[in-house]
Image (cartoon, rainbow, N blue to C red):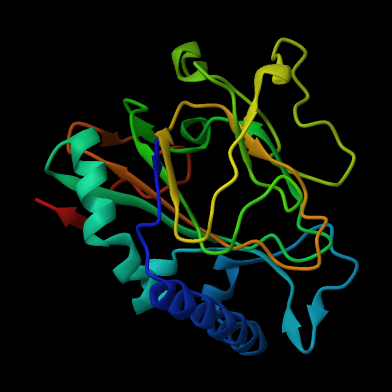
Length: 239
């Protein structure tokens, strides 16, 4: 489901300015050897780790904890209204992430199901992918395989891929049926956490920025994996 034009241009501009601030913040955390720096992941296939003194980032995790702007976006009334229509009135937030796909070398993301990497059962979350800049086939817009949420939970392996690598190592997955989903800045794509999806590399001269959130109802439970915390608290965003 595509939620079109739910953000104003002012909201988009505020998010873009905040992304610039977070790059500076990430550099400070790394310089100070702060453990929180682990949430700022470098682009693995970039030719340089820095540009203009700032890190070339692939993604930032736990954005809700380091940014009031992206905390507010996770609670955007138009967005929450739509997610409530899908999952019910009571909602918790599982994930708050920025995917940054830097210019020229933003890596591809192999096809995968989000729930294959998440310790939640049943695997029935809603992923929200918010375009903060126009998302096109040229800069690696998201691709989805229709009806793949009916396949059940499967294993997928490594997600981050260099330009030219295959979008999956699995011989049993027909990626020819995948549909590219371009989005305008301010649009959001909502999909089931079992939908197989991926994205190509960014070959343009501009970064492609995406805010990712995942929501779940109280009927979904946290199942800790080996060496993970036995309990976790998730923010309530509705109900």
